[in-house]
Length: 223
Ligand code: PMT
Image (cartoon, rainbow, N blue to C red; front, side, top):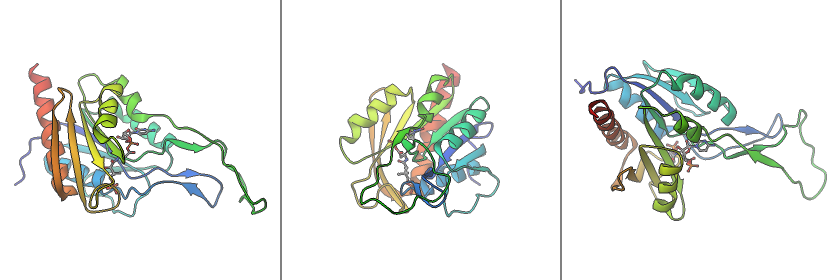
């Protein structure tokens, strides 16, 4: 039987991309498949946690025994997450949230006419930063997907968004990041430590991320 070291914990996981509609036919999104977040949600459930998964559009089946909340846009993901923060003890934000959305959604299909079309975008809410401001004694794990200056950019997220841990994916490497079954990551801790995780399956990486989150919860409860 799997170690029930997360029994009593209420784990909130986000996964997948968000989808920002341009008109009834088109949208802006990204390559996230949801695999990383779903692996974390399943692993947390196996270890005894009560799990809620807030998922953007993916092709994956709802995991057994997990309340799965389906959302489309970043705004919807924000609302679904914020409703559930208070009840959570561990929050893992593996979703790839669109930073921008079209400023307005056309009600009818945009017709082809001029040679160039300018799409005006506006900023989406930063869900993770908002959760960070009300963190309390919750353990908060963020992700970072970067093509350049991985550690430096991930560290900015760790401190700027008040996180306990950042899983930094070097998406420039084969076998890491979006839409594959494996990942390569660096774990950035608050005390400055950087743990390098080699190429491994996302299920295996989920186990390591949850090991660290469980450790932080125990530390928090002691201190
Ligand atoms: O889904 P897979 O195909 O398995 O791929 C996994 C993954 C690469 C998507 C995942 O492991 C990952 O890295 N997710 C975060 C990708 C990302 O959007 O990174 P970011 O650097 O833009 O965002 C940093 C963090 O802030 C993330 O935890 C993100 O959930 C959060 N965020 C970002 C923007 C925003 N408006 N709100 C947020 O909460």
